[in-house]
Image (cartoon, rainbow over all chains, first blue to last red; front, top):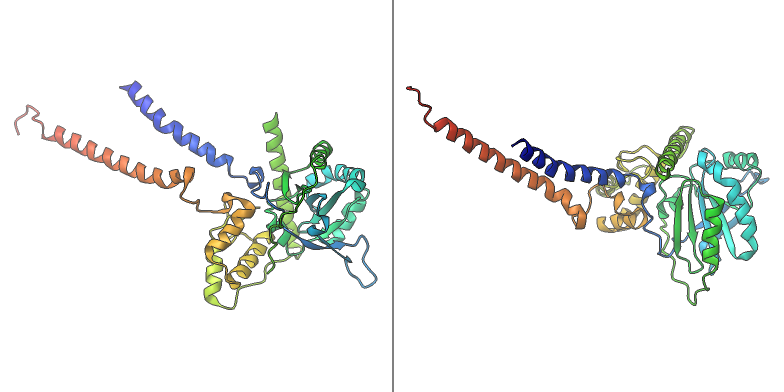
Length: 201
Length: 148
C-alpha cells in the first residue's frame, strides 16, 4: 500500500515539478532568444549625440542616422548606459573591434538607453573614448522596437538587413569578431528585404 | 560553470535595472498621461495590464513604474488612438519580445496545459471526494455487530 502511495505521489509530483522548472526557466526575458532573429531589422532614425555641447547648448551634432543608410553593410547595434556595470566591461572590446572593421563595411552604433548625454559623455571620457557614434533614443522607441529587456544588449544585422544574433549582457571581443567575420563572409544580397517598419507615434 | 556564469550575469544585469530605477528618480521621463477619450484610455490600460513589463518580471506594463513601461504605455496609447485593434497591439509586442510578453499565454500547443490542468485537477479531486464519501458511507452503513 505504501509503495502504491509513493508511486502515486511521484506520478503526480514529478510532472508538477517539471512544469514548475519549465515555468522558472522561461521567466527571464533576457535568456529568451529574440523573435527578431532572422527577420528584417526594425528601421530607426536617431540623432547622433555630440561629444561636447554645441555653442547653442545642444547635445546633438545635427546628423541623423538611419539603418537604411547601411544597405549591404554589417551593422552592430549596442544598447548601453553609463549606470550599467557590464557595459563598462564590454566597452574597450567594442571600441577596438569597431576601429578594426571600420573600413571593411562594418558600422557600430551605441544606442543610449535611459541616460542623459552629460552622463554618457563623462562615461565615454572615463573609459578612454569610443570609436563609433552614440545615438540618442530619448523616448526609448527604438529600444522597444528592438525588444530590449535590459542593458547591455548587442544586435548584429547582416548585409541582407536581417537581425542575425542578439547577445545579452557584456559581449566579448571574441564574440564580436567571430560574428562579424561570419557575416562578412556572406555574399552581398541581390535584393534587400523591406525593413520591419518602425513604429512612429 | 556555464550556469554559474549565467546566474552571475543575470545578477549583474539586475543591478543595472536598479540603476535604471535610480536614474528615474533623477528626473527621467514618467509618461505622457492619459488619452482624452476615456474609452480609448480604458482600452489602452486594459491592454497594458495584460502585457508583461520587460525589465520588472511578473509585473504588467500598467503596474510598473519603470520608465520603459511608461514609454510602452504611451506607445499603446498611440497605437490605440491610431486605430489598432487589441490583437494588433498584442501582435506588435509579441513580434518584438516573443510570447513571453503576454501575461495570459495563448491557448495553443504546450500552453494548453495551463488551461487543461486546473480543470483536470478539479475533476480528479471531485472524483476522489465522491469515491471517499461512498466508501465512508458504505463503512457507516455496514453492520457493526453491536446492538443499537
